[in-house]
Image 1: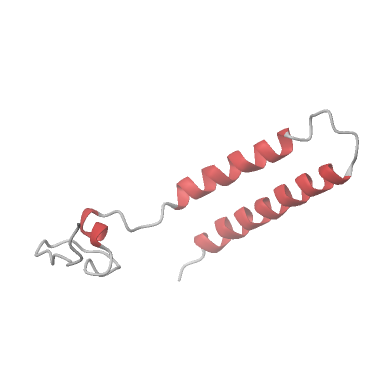
Image 2: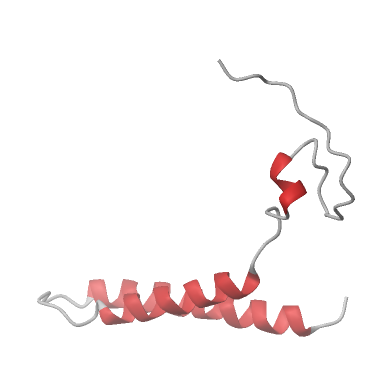
Amino acid sequence: MAATDVELTTDKVITKVDPAEVPSAAWGWSGESHKTFRVAAVVVIVILLGMLIGNHSGKVEDLYLIGFAAALAGTLIYDVIYRRKPR
């Protein structure tokens, strides 16, 4: 059975989280990769719009695909603009 004790590290790692709460913070794994999220959003938008080509006959599916792609694109554009502003 694995131990539940948290080992405290004495390394001089500067992170935004406490390594006692998130042990992987000592290795630098606790950050967010905004570039990866943006690339993933673009890939998902392309996939959603690519699903418009198919053998379905109704237009309701198309509206949902376009709507979700537009919402994701709007969120992506908002994130790009928000990240440019100095805090």
